[in-house]
Structures are given as structure tokens and as C-alpha cells.
Image (tube, rainbow over all chains, first blue to last red; front, side, top):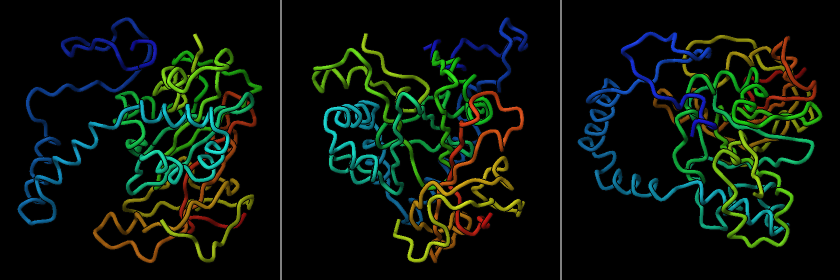
Length: 221
Length: 98
């Protein structure tokens, strides 16, 4: 994952940070045993169960449901939109309703699908926390939640995209979407040349998570 | 979400985001405060997160908009196309007609 993850490298905390690469970032904390937040989560969970607000069963079911959410769902949505122009229209007008047609619930949030074209590229971030279309893409990758990505992609999005291997000419308008409130975002990438006549399954296979966050574009090869 | 009965703004309207720094849970990033942009769309009406955060019901629901701001209007030394934009969600009570 080294090519797509600015924070993915071996990190040992028994040395200082002048270790041969010149980017600054927050230390990646790997806690031994339960950290403060983990203890807090358990305490709140126990209280909620004790007070009868939720049950242990509710939590288990939610975790079970989240385990079934993966980027493959989003890839199916994208491939369908590439193949079915009527579905694509509905998807761009009302993302929540269109993914519900495919049996994908959005929960409490609404989905906005933003379309890439030869003139426009879209990229998603949540600067305030880590809002992410979890029911369509599963859990967000660590880099999406990193302070590095969240702060830099609004200030210098083109430099960040370049680090992900996505270099945009200035003739392409870049739209950065901050999911700072109640909407969630999914990028509908442009269908790459060389995929004419491909089956829906073949198309699904080239739509990666990073393409749907907008830090990469799908490739036919 | 529910439909907005009487939205104060329509897509294309020029707006300014209030340059305010009230204490508490606010979902307006500091970089966007005081900036001018245009309404990209009306998202709907949602319970006010500034109230929800403190255990209130957040009602009445507040209209939420997507505001499109030119990157060069946010960051004076922005590197990229002049057409590059940043879009984010702002509640009606943070918006002023520009």
C-alpha cells in the first residue's frame, strides 16, 4: 500500500523523527493494551446497556452489519452507473435513493454522488472528523482519518493527489468536497478507455476504494 | 432529512459564511468562516447539530446548503487552476446574503 498511503510505512517509536524522509506527520500511535479512548468506549458502552438505551445484541448486530460493508458495494454502484445511463441519472440526482435500489442503506446520512469527467475531478475529505460513506465503502482507511490528509487535501489538493500517483493538468477543474455535516460523498469515476464491451463484473474489478474517494482513477489494464 | 419549506437561498445565490467564533460544537470549519461563495444545492433540512451535540433534539430542523467557494478565495497562494473549488455544507443560520 506504500503507493497509496502517505502514512503507511514502518514506524518505530524508539527513534527520533529524522529518519530519512522529509515529510512531517503526527506520530502513528499503536497502543499496547487499552488506551484512554478504548477504556472510555467500553465505559460508555456498559453505561448505555445498563441504562437500557441499547442492548449488547444491538451492538453485535451493528458490528456484524459493518463487517459486510466493503468497497465492493461502491464498485457495484459505479459499474452499474457506467452501464445503465438511466441509473446514473438517478444516482446523480439522489444518491441515497439510487443506492437503496441496489439494497444499500445509507442510515442517518444522505449520499451525494459527484461525477468525474475529462474536465472535472472530485476528491472527498472530512476535515472535522472522518465522515465517510461507510455503508457503501466500509471502514475508512487510516490515511483518510490522518491529520495529514485531512488538513492538506483542502489546502494543496493537487500536491496530495500527486502523492497518490494522480497528476491532474491545470485544464482539469478540481473540486474538493468537505463532508463536514450531514451528507456523505462518493466519487463516480470516469469510465476508462479500453473497457468498451466489458461485463459489469469486469468493470467492478477495476473500481477501487481510492477511485471512489477521488485520490486515484480507474485503469483498464 | 426533510424538504426545506421556505429556503432563504437558491442554487446560484451568492452568500457569505459568517465570520463568527462562538464557543461549542460547530460544524463550520474555521477556514471557511468569513468566505464568500455560491449556493451549489439545497441538501434538505436536518436537526441542528449544534443542539444535538448537547443532548437537545435539534428541532426545528435547519436548512442545509452546499456552498461552493473558489480555492483562490480561501488560500491566497493556492497552487492549481483558478477554477478549482472547495465545496462544503453550511447551515442556513451561518449564511448571509452577499
